[in-house]
Amino acid sequence: MKKIALLVVAAGILVFNSCKKEGCTDPEALNYSDKAKTDNGTCQYEEVQETGKVTLMLAHYWVNETMDFSLNMQYVHPETGDSLTFTTFKYFVSNIKLKKEDGTWWTQPESYYLVNLDEAEGAQLVLSGVPVGNYTGISYVMGVDSTRNVSGAQTGALSTTSGMFWSWNTGYIMVKAEGTSPQAGMGGAFTYHLGGFSGNNNIVTTKTAAFGTESLNVTTTSTGMIHLGVDPSRLFTTTGSVSNVGMVHMPGQNAVTMATDFYNSGVSFKYIHN
Image 1 (spheres, helix red, strand yellow):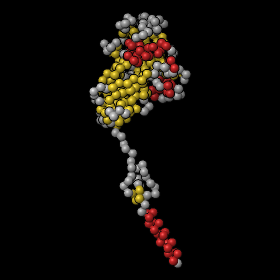
Image 2 (cartoon, one colour):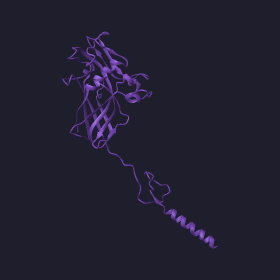
Image 3 (spheres, helix red, strand yellow):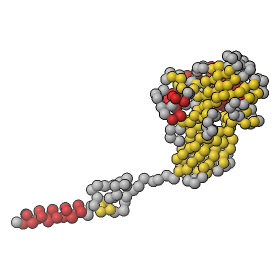
Image 4 (cartoon, helix red, strand yellow):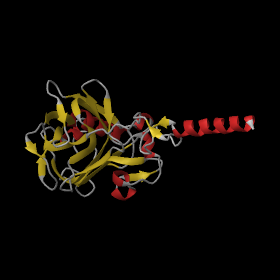
């Protein structure tokens, strides 16, 4: 009988202690314990990051901001004397990053945009989910990185239905400029499909810029703006007149030359606006 009494007492102590087991009892918490019977106030939760939006504004102009640039307007190139009317102008901007005031970088997920001047909103890229805070610079890629060039069928800006894709071997057309000119051969038309992502044919270019003395302030209620200038006349800096090179339809030296001139001297940071 004495042994039985002791066992009953021991069992009672175990039941009592199990009933009193403390811990986090909230299933939504990171440290939730399904064994805890009493909440002891130690629940931990994932911190919710407040975010806002930033708009990347791409202002297109002709020859050092002397005039605005748009499709189906005739422009004269001051160095070649060519008369040029663009009917198509598209290019990719990708892998956008913003530099925080502490020196770290925020990278926008799935950051691929096709800028198309044939669309009303084509020159405004809205970056969502930007953590609230102050930013001092930007990094972005002109073109599409090599990984995405060989990643199979994709959606969004990288969809093969956009008319900006050759094949899995040659990848994306990263700049497409088409139009007419009296100086061009091929019935007075020029066609530049610039691409290439590997080896000597790689035209993918990373650009960075500091905002200077002013910081871009991102809040939950306002949309900061970053202004870039884009000058299509820079395509011809080295190749010169369309009578010299009027058509580029594959990766190669002409594509590298034209893309390098356009990316390096034709795309630049201008200012920010809070």
